[in-house]
Length: 228
Image (cartoon, rainbow, N blue to C red):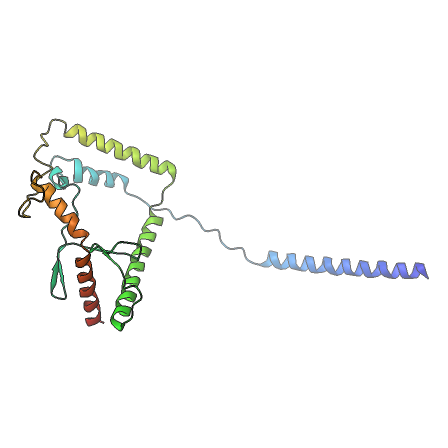
């Protein structure tokens, strides 16, 4: 009796092993029958390195270069920005910022807890435009993300270019070149301050002017509402 039960269990076990074996072989056959995906080759971008070298030389280092040294003399100055919105003229650009930035006219933020329809529309538009800029910056950051070795080579190239500029300007009188901007701000803010310093101090004060920020934000809200 016991021998017959053991033989039957052995037979069931053999059938289960055979079924598993058959299922495994069928799965392997199906896997081999599937077409393999073609291996994607890395795209090769042809770069005109000789042409780039010639353009770099013609732009900056030739005797009659496209960008002479005077083109870079105005150092440390932002581009001039003038615009009129809602009947008011402004002489500074601004960055789209979120709530962590101070209320200065150079940082334009959305309205905190907007209540009116105008404020909600402006805040939504400001947030959308700011996110577009952030996405574009993210794409550029990913595009120009280099390895440490490449960064070292870039820094070495910058140092070499800097030394070349110093060597080229070694015998040049630069005393009256780098401060060429005249100031028309009226009386000097400090008695003995040079005009350029007085202008910079006044610009710094204007960039921190909270009432000007409030006025600019109001004008932009009205502009967005009128053009919605």
